Amino acid sequence: MTFDDEAMMALKTATALVAGILLAGCASRYTPTPLPANFPVAKQAKLQAAGHWGVIVDDIEKRIVAELKKSPPRPVFIAEARDPTPFQRALATQLTTSLVNDGHTVSRSPAGSLRVDLDVQALTFAADRPQYRNHGQLASLGAGIWTTRDTPVKLEVASSGGALDTRDTWNAQFAPGETPKTEVIVTVSVSDQYRYVARNTSAYYVADTDRMLYGIIDPLPQEPQLTRIFKVRGDM
Image (cartoon, rainbow, N blue to C red; front, side, top):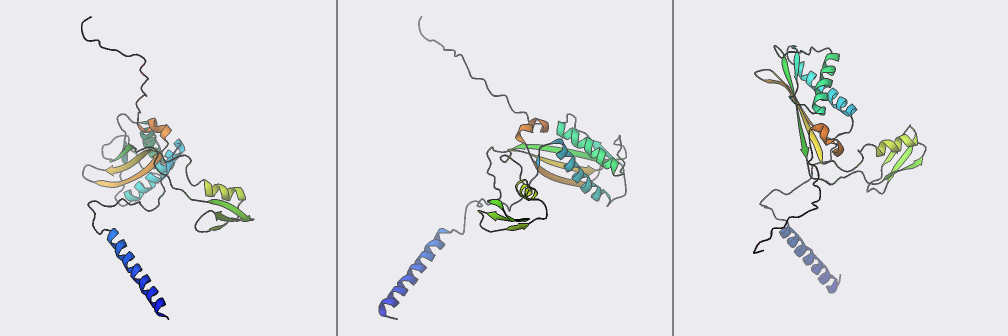
């Protein structure tokens, strides 16, 4: 190795050290507030039909029954809201049906029964929230073999079904449209006068066009003002 080569290597090493020091200085170890970070990828169901209400009620009922089995059997009483929304009324009705069909005693009176309360909190978030979905397209390689295109990692999918079924399954896992601004939090509590016996909470997206079904009444748009009133001051 010549003197020039050694000098060039020393220069490169020094440059790398300086760059490392500068980068380390840019990454501060202390901040006045926590840095915003995304949660890991998760999926949240979107309610778009009355049939979906039945699906979530069946899931709620199974979880409640699993908790009720830990205690001596007692009848339950479904407490309905005083002024229920269509969604709340359907939840109470369908939960009663599910419990009765599964052999549980649903009382028409709260006396001597466990009380089941259904709390629905409807929320409105900012519109035009970002939406992240799978990138790329599913392309056929042959009979029953599919691959992804335009993605960082290639993924091959083998399917014994038809080509259309495989493509539809790949594309249909996400609800159509933009991320809704409307969500509901559903909390079901089973309790007596002393304690909670069972309780679970779930969150769902709601189609923005169905907000009234969940108790959200949007104000009417203001009509354009066609006239103006001017006050004249001074001597006439």
